[in-house]
Length: 265
Image (tube, rainbow, N blue to C red; front, side):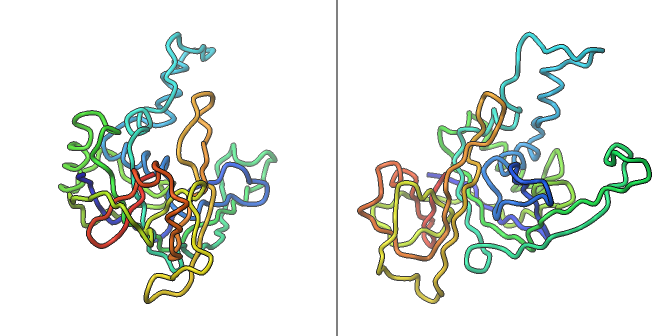
């Protein structure tokens, strides 16, 4: 199978968790599928949540709902079936996080006159991933070729960023590569689903590395009711995989590029 591979990095990143915002806004530890789809959609010029709102609620005095509703933002309509593999390059599978405090001085941000809203956001420090986008039936005809052409020629309709426009994304070393399915695997180098497979209790650790195990429930899809996140547990680790625990779906998602074992989510 062919895939588009590129390096994705930045000085900082912020992928907001929607469930906690009383004291600070917290971030997911890695770029997730929806944020990645949004970035790829921006590169191709597809609309996002604001454009979806304008379609569903035409600009009228009372913002009546449109007769034909756009269920998902345009970028997700295009990429929702796409398969991607995400390889983190952080120490032990994750990146340092720092809490940033700054003032929001716009008038509507503060409820009381003369008050300034303090915003606290948790940012990833110097994140870096290798991304693979599969060229398969998950993308409609022409979309993969258009995306590959854009990245290979350093072209983008909108500026790609890592979660917010405060965090510009650097995309480097794009290439078209061949990946092949694997029948046996000891280690998986990318983020992968952990709800079906497990790891050997006394298994090996990938040579030349200390023990590392990172797990987080991360968004992998949007629901049609309110565009809320659908979550799955994702893991990146150098612990040996227990092959007896792997399902047929796991094997269908496993590929190798000659050096690394990839799990397409």
